Amino acid sequence: MTRAVDELLDILDLEQLEQNLFRGRSPKDRWQRVFGGQVIGQALVAATRTVPAERRPHSLHAYFLLGGDPRVPIIYEVDRIRDGRSFTTRRVNAIQHGRPIFSMSASFHLEEPGFDHQLPMPDVPMPEALADDSRLRDSIMPRMPEPVRAYFERERPIELRPVEFERYAYPEPRAPRFHVWIRATAALPDDPAVHQSVLAYASDMTLLDTALVAHGRTVFERTIQPASLDHALWFHRPFRADEWLLYAQDSPSASGACGFSRGLIFTRDGTLVASVAQEGMIRPVREEAPGPG
Image 1: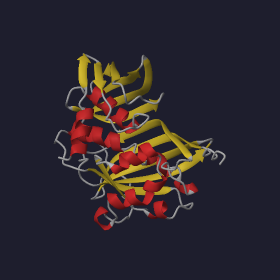
Image 2: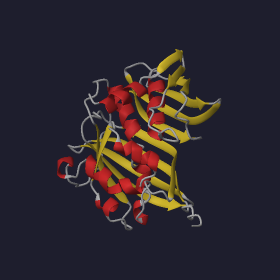
Image 3: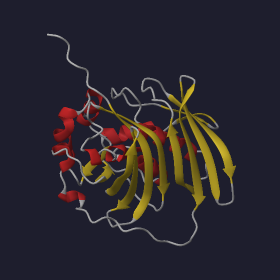
Image 4: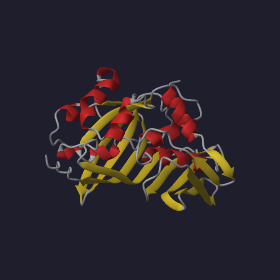
């Protein structure tokens, strides 16, 4: 297991303070705000630990209320909304400095048979045919703000292999679609709850950036102020987050400094395992003019 994956699993392993109260920490990676995927993953862990093991999460809907402070722990308070015969509902509030920074509702379902269909996976190259993570870092590193650059320079728990890699090397407006292969950089425990929490973490990594494809821009630029505003995730079928998954994303709309993006997540054999939707802020900002001299 790599150090980065070990740290991710440690971050997702919340400390239980009371029956419905959990405490999570953030990695010391010099980010000014807590990564949104971390809060989603931790909140899902908190909710899952209040639900019988035979019921698995099938959907979550979340709002980011305030930027998280990575210097202090996050308290997760779980409200046990309903325990039905087939479905269980939980609400989770993440709290820092006495204020909620994040709110999520999650639904859990007892597995049962039923109708089954799915959209086909897009026809894209397999991950082995694409540039590895190091080329991605080398191409976009010079344009990154310092905290983001520091994150990409260190070992990370999720590997990314973009299909449309050229958007980083040759920035220009393109059709608002983005495909990227993702996986944990080391083997994970077999517990399905771990794989769902890791995918929840990873689902926030590239989705907002897709809203800028149509404009030839990326969230890594100093002149873009990005922030996730809300996030929805649906789990459809079993998967492993330490095996390659295709994150097929598009952005139907951007307006008023906000971008809306959607994603479908497939295993490499074409099985649709999850769907994602998100709106986020993509505010253009002006770089400060140089001083006299």
